[in-house]
Length: 362
Image (cartoon, rainbow, N blue to C red; front, side, top):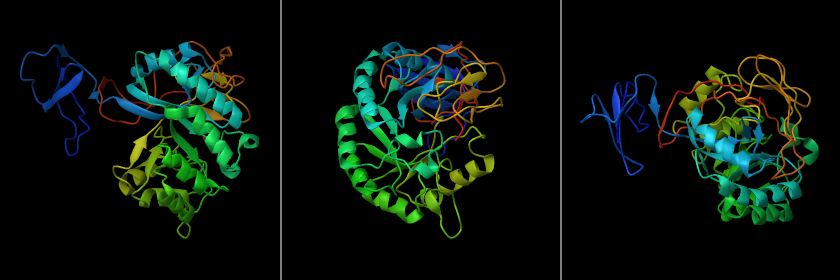
């Protein structure tokens, strides 16, 4: 199959934007990319827009009114089926802080639920964002559910998650955290520093123990100071670490995003940290297990004291869904297909990036 596009982003070093460009696909595999007119009559001509690689989102708590930690197989399948509307072709469902036993139950259920995803974006595994976080940097996470990473808790979650558990966010300054980093890494799980008040030296120690990422750079972590670089400073200068970054220009300012890209080229991946209200009409939405209420605003959803509020409009009714992590709430309504930027990696998806409603502001 030969596709012609007015603009094509191949995402290969030194290639830039091809205007116009073409893409050759054979047997579901991209076999060629070029600039200018295609070498033969194209099977598909895109008259407008940008043809970009499929985007990979490493942090998706929910979407389209569905909380991925509290829904059934149909919920996962629905989110996966619709995420390509935003350009995302693969993602990590993300479970936020909850009691360890609840998270273990959610992981065991998710292993079965994930099998229902047969179309749309691929499920790459599960991201546990908690419960081994810093209460001082809890953000939207419930402090009373945050616990230190004891060997027993780490083992329980590893046993429950099996091969599905791919990424764990933790605070490296917590008691027992470095041993947890080593245990998780030995089990093949990527460890990310996040929701952390760690010093730069503590983050470096985590990297030495095996940590390889920082979760939503700048948000819910010790910031950059000229005498104590903190999580942000170590993330930007430590070549062992890649950083997730929410580039909706609300969580992080344009200037701060530019600093990250300039300081850590090739080590920044865009994430949404999307909540269940992402892609939903503006209104009030109560997050699952979080501590938030949002106000009416433009762009990202805001949190305040128990609910998120998606931007610019009235609320919708909510419906509770059961499944992994039963007891946590989600919300539903008429979906809006618009969505924010995603982390880019090669695949193939036609579309435009853009800011969208329903990102949980930290």
